[in-house]
Figure 1 (cartoon, helix red, strand yellow):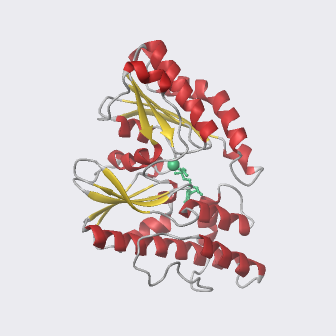
Figure 2: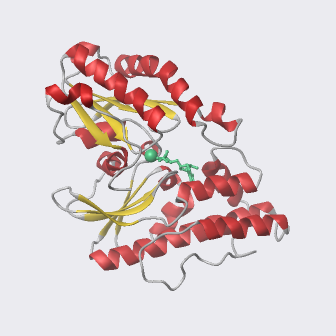
Length: 324
Ligand code: KG4
Ligand code: ZN
């Protein structure tokens, strides 16, 4: 069995998967309630909570899978990118577990984990494809070659799409995490009531940008330009349109005919609905595996080499990734 850990932000996650990545259990202990008091993730609180939660979360994942530590033949851990103090809890636990049990350790890039969440779909993409990764920390177009190698072809110039949802929710007086709350309010609104100018309109380069939208929303909220539900709907529509338009450009630049959708924002119903407009096959990560989880880290670890045993204890967490 693979034991996988993920502690890059504010969710303490552990999963047990079979050697081919088939999920046996996945526990996500969310700290959202603690951070909601502050309107966003407080890194120091995240690290301390991970420390408290990691042991019980691993125990729960093993128990739910009907396993004990003796059944674990490989440990996988998300080593970055993310909050360094938060990552270090998972990395240290994983090193200790692997060392104590004499099993190999695989370091996984968190973004590669999100991409691998597509392997948990009912019909995963076959062959080369393009992936739209939209999360709280990143908005990327990642080209996946048939051999699985990944190249990032587009990044955000400023905020990430999830960050835009979270900041928009805060401006509208909604709680944290803001994405689901803003999406729920948008359900009752008319996106055409007060349309926002689309970011980077008319530009053919592949970059994303969301900070201008956030400023436009702040001004509209201050001016009471429309009821909050209409503003939420219009703001969501502008984010979705921008993601869609850049995905379209990325598909024509690469010639890929399959698009994968992953990351926390991939749970957004409007985005999933609008992506169906694209003239390609769209594979969205299953809802359970959009937000941070350890099952995707186990899936990414399948086929990745383990650290040489003499380097196991030298593994360090890293805040940034070559993919981001
Ligand atoms: O992938 P994720 O769990 O963590 C990171 O790696 O960042 O993504 C979290 C982000 C948050 O910004 C959250 O507001 C957003 O995903 N999110 C959503 C929805 N559910 C989560 N955004 C829009 N609509 C949703 N339904
Ligand atoms: Zn993530």
